[in-house]
Image (cartoon, rainbow, N blue to C red; front, side, top):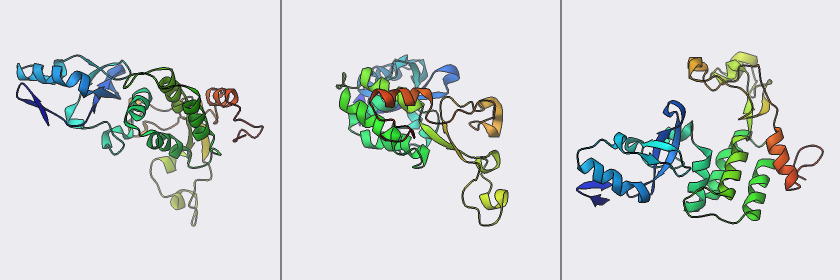
Length: 229
């Protein structure tokens, strides 16, 4: 590890920071840019949380060293991961395929490959931006990623109950499963307790939503069946 003022810095470039409303969203912090300043402040006796940093998407964040690296195997990034930061990091680190897989998995292969084709079209169409900074390309990819098709199951299945117990012996897939937009569909927040992240039923938007469909049409990828053209 590199050392600044006696304080060691992690060897990886992108750490995790908490930001946004009530610090619930997890962002990528560029330690090449902010690390030396954080280390110098800590060496002077300040707390890391007192050092103002900004994530790669430009959000004011609190660097959370204990969470480790902003990477795909982080247990902390299974929820609340900033899409804009994710794409900036992926484009910088050359992990674009992993970033695409992260979002296309949510559809369970039922979106006819539409999301992957939209990502591929954007990557082919727009030039790279500045390294480790948001730009037209990364922000459009993130915008589409937020509206990714996601398989939603009934409440009992979503809470982890056996599908056979809920729907009958031999049932291995929820019969009420539907492909919905992850962003447009309303889901319970922290106030929902154990139901946080589950749809509540009042606003369920079928995928592809108008955002994904509009982008797919722009790139001439949508046919009458909404699958790949």
